[in-house]
Image (cartoon, rainbow, N blue to C red):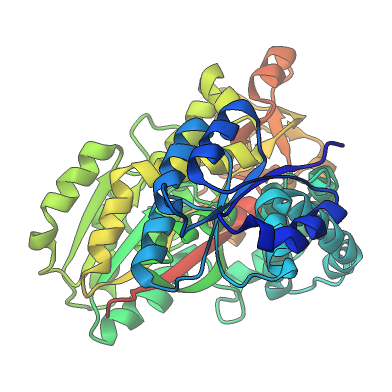
Length: 516
């Protein structure tokens, strides 16, 4: 292991010999110069790991030397040391992207802390994250075993996501252990859903918040309080993705964050239509047959969302005005931004953003996108990059200057699948990899969640003998015909429609501008 090589630039370097000796005793190699020009010459000849730079020197000052050093070695962190506490000097130094700012007289521990922060942060963060997860591993396991209610499972999922992001940020080697624990958690979660889901549907008063409850319990009360609402639905948006994006919005908004459950199937046709209508899918099909599209029909399954919202408002005899906006690209965002003044007249503005869902499907169909989003971390990273560089972020900035209460949610999440299970169906069987409905399905009952009577789950029943089956965890359905091709094509793709924490436990965030 090499010793870190430091450069200390100070016209009073002789007075700093105790500090230099202290650093040498800690294993650092330290070179010293007394002026900016010598520092520049030495930077051209030698590679340093970090530079301490005095701000107030004769000849080239520290602030004058700093950009010249950055030209020679742009990646080397520079710590500015000064006697001055003037704000403009601090601003200039920070504006030049210094790594740290120390006020004289500095003590050895300050210097050591700055070194740890700038040279050893990654190793320290990794060590602390590893230790923290190791200490929590057993507790999480016990929490999984002791989870008997839907609130228990929300807490388990939040905790697993927390450690997933912590270990990812630390580039830890323990991510595989966490992945195994998530698999264990999902296995237990599937059993929990199988045991309780039909009871939730039958007993609305005791169930968790689910898709058709969102408007009634989260949107209408805000409208009743006299606030205008911007309701943004990001299709196929997971809780871990929200946790990553939230950092981008924290400067503009304060958050009230909660989780709720998507209905089954965790697919747009069912879950999003349930959100907008306030009804379970079979009720939509019964009450508004012209607004429901069956699986075997060619028509798009989400073309009637605005009419469904209208029926919802009318059914509750409300007078709220609303707009509906579906956005598939940046041009759609720009159009929405240009129309914001006209939307101010509405009590409720609904926006559906399809990018994340499009990314998920593109990852399946495109080898290049699959390479770019090869892991869960990469998938989150692409989502973050899209948000940072898209017009969507500009939309949120504009909304931060408005009087709207902003509510963000999704219709369902997604999970990366890698375990094929065989199912046989006739030609009318739907093509989704995570759920199937049909008259003549053949499968291993132990591998699926079976709903023989769709009415109990309040799902449409195209035929008397129609049943539904759902894959759990990281399973996906594959037909015996062309099985190997099917498996190779869909393994490690992101899919939704079935049962997992990632698909079912989804975020709902109430946001308020910090400017209000």
